[in-house]
Image (cartoon, rainbow, N blue to C red):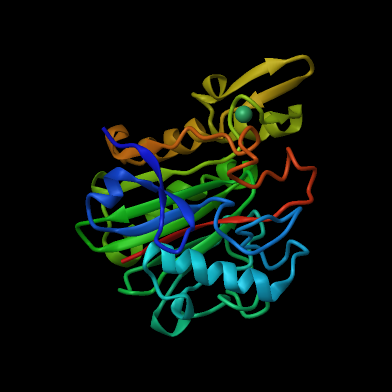
Length: 271
Ligand SMILES: [Zn+2]
């Protein structure tokens, strides 16, 4: 059985990894707040260049996280995340794109896929769901940013399907890690969000929400797992970290729990 475990790197950075991916020798991780250089309210390992923190410190933090995972910061590729469902195919000449500058990042995308070795994909989060995807057969990786909009748009499933289109990935081969995000314990949403969920998850939406007063509690973790299972990723291959960011602001950044003034943790995946 796979697990999500926290590890302290030699440089003092704490990050989480999925044991089923680590057993494959895949370099990956989800950063925590621990081991960086930022001060409150961004303390300490803030990776978000758009968060209001000092950009120079954020770049140093990104480099520290990359060192901790064992990937090359200078080659990391990222995108300008917009809560959409566009997926960018990362090629060799995308290496380093957006690592040091938001303006240089791949525009308007919320998932990256690649078959390039030694080219780390990195995205940033504060409550949204990191979906890490590894195809050990075709040797390809994908990384998605799934808030409620991306989750309802099924960006995780679309990322696997895009890997199929470009690399021949079969969903049945994929190993997936669903990282820390705001959990079903804390993620209160309004009726209009539930209406979009109903339209997208016609048969299963009832299992993904619980009514609370005139609001709903939404389970982003299982909404992401369900859409992956629906396209053929075996449930046994999907690990949910089960860590709620809103309840663990000592370890992770939470947009909701910290009322918008906070940093970003990151997820990295690299062949
Ligand atoms: Zn919670």
